Amino acid sequence: MREKKPQYIILLISFVISLAIVGISIAYGDCMSQDMLLNRLLLPIFRLLCFITLGLVVGQIIESTGWTERLSVFARPLFSFSNLGNQCSAAFTAAFVSGVISNAMLLNFYQEQKISKMQLFLTNYMNQLPAFFLHLPTTFFIIIPLTGTAGVLYFTLTFAATLLRVICVLLFGHFYKPDFSDDAKKDPSEDTGEKQNDNNGKILKGNRVAHRGEDKSSGKENAVKKRKHC
Image 1 (cartoon, rainbow, N blue to C red):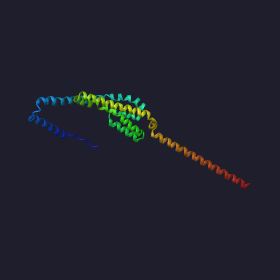
Image 2: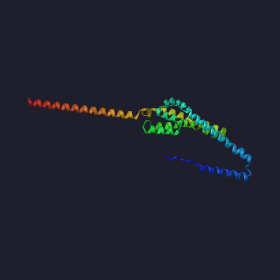
Image 3: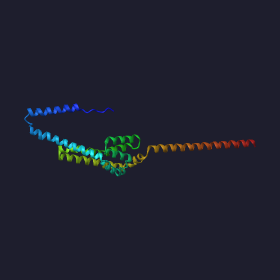
Image 4: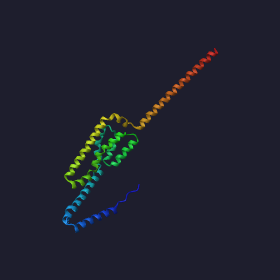
């Protein structure tokens, strides 16, 4: 797969256009002064860059220390309650590190018939919770400096909606278990093995019946021969 090259030319053109707009506004406009440029544009941009850098550093520390993997241990009782199975729990654990890896695992499990389509959808809905925490360090430090209290309210409502969705999925999986939990926990190889054993049993029974029929026919022929000799 060919790697994408960084679009340095596009970034350079955008930067030059931005500088040109700012320069024209200062030179020919009365609404923008140097103090306004410093206090209303440069300082907020610098503060935003500092928060973005801090958020990226925090995210890397969390990922490198394995803190997210320790948190994912709490998923085991949740998936046991919802009857979604060990495969879905493993995908949920991977979602704390990468959503792409989690989706790839779910697709692989579904193609191998280890999970049903219902389990695939339900686990994908539940993966919104680790995705929220995965992107929280970056988005939090971008939105909060720009929006303040409104940003805190936004994150609170988003987290509440995500948590409510997870609770609904857990309850649905717990009470909907007769339709998919038993089949999902079976290994496809076990099913094929059971079918082969059944087929082998039927073949053995057929052979026994055939042998019995042959024995009976041979017995009748011997009896007829004895009568003729008599």
